[in-house]
Length: 436
Image (tube, helix red, strand yellow):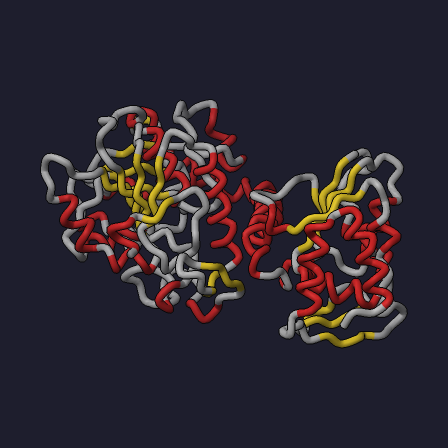
């Protein structure tokens, strides 16, 4: 439906961002529109696909609250989500603001709002730039975000949505961890006998022949599709890859007669049930962090190497422990990948790095729900290599973002994803032999 309100708004957009105007015209003309209902209160708002776009009580007060954590001296701010124009109005009211970049998370919702409300008060402001969030490679801080539009983000905006979730979740997690550091002190002290005598992880750095491939193996469901390939590769005596696996993938590999060369364990909750030390030999090595379960360290049969991360939780032992830091962004897959790179890998194949509940499972070889929420508890979706939406959790999206950002900085290393069943991982290529 093209009405006077839409035409007036679009005249401004067409004059400033003509390419974007074409996208919005198309979105307004499409048949599959979101379900919309007017919600009345002290203020009016819209209920879109069951999600209330803004407050119906005091929209301006809500907008002020949503931008309250952004210091007023920022000259350039990015806003994700267009809403009903309230956050734009409040941000443009700041005296020091020189540029406001507004990123559309759902072009269909924005086209709908343009038909219902006059948005020229901010569209005409020379400080405003307007673009599709889908056109960005990564989020642009400092930023504000409209929470409802994270839920309502279009398919094209899902990658930026995931990175916004990651950034928000990382901030919350850091705050929680900062408050809880004291709870980890007893474990750090308990493990001192181990990490004072074990080798630091940097003893492994630059130890890999340049021609040797590295397989980094996660515990995602797609791992089950590649046991035969991994086992056959390991049996090639002259060209066997180095197998670095996460702790929760050990059971799966051992059940298929595959021996990991290096096991990486990060979570303090991992037990002998998760990592069966009695089934391993001295041919496997362990890279662990100082919060590891002491029973694992005591019973592990091979060499042990201790590592740190940049997290504040290790500040109490950082001066005493001369171990290098491995990259971490919430998942054990991050230090496993970083270890491969620091060892000198030029080619890294990723197995079981799904970041999603592919094949209606959460992990390879584990019963549904054994390592956390079952796949039925999925709250989000992510696009896989086949262009399909697969269920996932918000924390898995955070882990995906961390890995993608890490990969983007490793220009000298080639990364291959071995499954299209899980999330698309930016910066990787699909391994032609395994994903066709």
